[in-house]
Length: 252
Ligand SMILES: C[S@@+](CC[C@H](N)C(=O)[O-])C[C@H]1O[C@@H](n2cnc3c(N)ncnc32)[C@H](O)[C@@H]1O
Image (cartoon, rainbow, N blue to C red; front, top):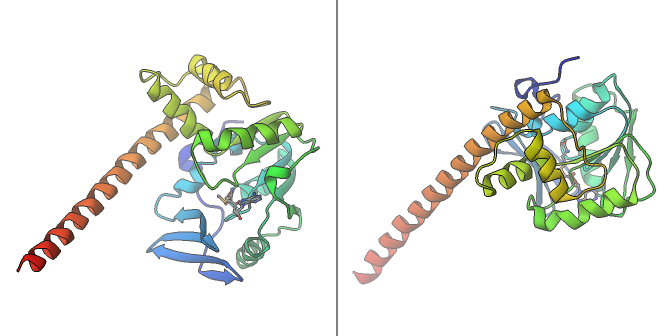
C-alpha cells in the first residue's frame, strides 16, 4: 500500500468555537482555530492549508497495531488512527479533563464514533510499563529539542514499543541537517541523526517514500520560518513607527 503524502493530510474533522470549563476552541483569525486551556495554547488548525495535520504525516504512515498517543488536542492524529484498518487500538494519555470533554463535543458534532478511543487521564510524562506497537508523543509545551530530550528518553525507557515517534522529530532532523553544513535528507544522515538523539525504539530505518515525505515537510518548515521571520520583522517595524510617533509627540 502506498504511503500518505503531504497533500493527503486534510483535517479529518470540522471545527467550530466551543468552550468547556477552562478549555476554549476559538477563531484566532478567519479560518484559523486555536485551542487554549488556561494560559496554554496547545494546538492550532489552519483551515487554509491543514498544516497541523500534515505535521503528523510520519506518524500516520508508521502506525499499526496498538498505538498510544499523548495529548488529545484537536484529536487529529487520533481520528486518523481510529480510521486506519492497520491500527487495532488507540489509547490517548491526556491530563486535562476539560480538553477531553471539548474534544468529545467536537467528535459528536462530526458524528465520529469515539467509543474505541481509550482515554487515560494522566500525566503522559509519568507513563510507564506500557507494552504496545507504537507510541506517538505530542504533549509538549515547547518544540525545542534541548527541553524535550530528557522527557522523550524517559518515556521511551519506561515503556515497551516497536516504534516511538514524537512531534516535531522532522523539524529537529531538518534543523540538525542545516546545522551540519546543510546536509541532505537521506538515509545516511537520518541514521546519523537517530544516533545523535539516542531515543530507544526510534526507527533506525525509513523507506525512500518516507524520506521523500520528510523532504516535503522540510520545505514547508522552511517556508513557515520565512513567514515567521517576516511577521516578526513587520511587528518590529510597526513598533518602531509607533515609538517614533510617540517620541515626536513627546518632543513637541
Ligand atoms: C499539541 S496538543 C495534541 C494535539 C493532537 N496530537 C492532535 O492530533 O490534535 C497537546 C495536548 O497535550 C495535552 N497535555 C499537555 N501536557 C500533558 C501532559 N503532561 N500529559 C498529558 N497530556 C498533556 C494538552 O492538554 C493538549 O491536549
